[in-house]
Image (cartoon, rainbow, N blue to C red):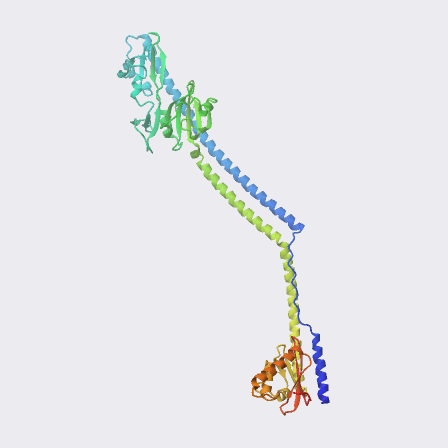
Length: 512
């Protein structure tokens, strides 16, 4: 008994020493601090923002400059073209009017020399140049009644009377050479390869010496407007026109605007702009149809007449508008790319400090992990050594000893414990629950005496014993019998969450 007591005391000291180990505790995680930008990051961000703004401004300045240069170049080219054509047409009209004046002067001299034998029909064959630009050559008295005319039906009528039923002042279709195709027709839609033109009656007259107040005159029509319109490229909505600047009236017009033109131009901005210069350009609404065009104009020398050649602004600037649209989209795309790249750089700068802190934390974590891994390896090595030592101690111990884990399962035991615990040899295994061990001891009759309701009593006793171990894990004594029927006890010393030791004590006087 004394040996058992000393052995028990020794086991108690061993069990009590296990309480020095503390259970593991959770380490609180520090909340993540917000990243604050330092002066270096702020300076870099400001620099990047300034560079991005400068690049975007430069892109738009260069793009707008190119757009303006292209627009100016296209406009200048269009203005030079229409101005040159207007000057050319004005010179042609001047020559035609000069031809009419000279021809009338010759006829006037012939009348003054011999008015009795003057025959206008005979002179018609001698003045083919005059008849090429004049439909009517006449001599009228003081009452403006026609006395002679190259058209016999005009004799006896007032000046211009024969033209009441003629196409002057009505829409005509002419070829590019000025030849007439159809007259007096209603036009709807495209007119094909012909040119629409409208001419109004113009008379040039000179006084005769005798009789008093008699006149000789000729009508004037020009095909140069139609020829000019057909020869130059002024678009599908271009206009060529001849105007009387003194009375502010339209004399002739070629192009789509001739379908329903406005005749009275006296109050128009277009004619007012023309009167300020002899030759020039003007951009604005054409007085005849109110369509915005680029006008080149020139005054007919010696006459109160202006010629204009105009091209629709939308057609003239189509190429420049296309270039401008492409340049605008290129500038916009470049700006978006630059801003996106700048935004990514700013984002990287903003997160630079946080990335550095995370990198340092990661480096520390790697170092700590290495230390922990080394410590774990050391602990495992020590544990292996301890297990080998514990196995050696179990083998040489004179008492029955067994080890249990934190869940009260067998981990290791010696032969004496296996022999005297009352557990069958084939049932003794690692990870055997201690309640199962108690159950086998009860069935072997080593724990108490049970009646007819042995099963319920056994389970109650097992539950009581397990409860004692969990309530009083250090130094719990559980009486029982050994395999020889002698009284003994199990001394159990369990460390919370750390396993424990079972010592089989023999020959005790404790009641079972």
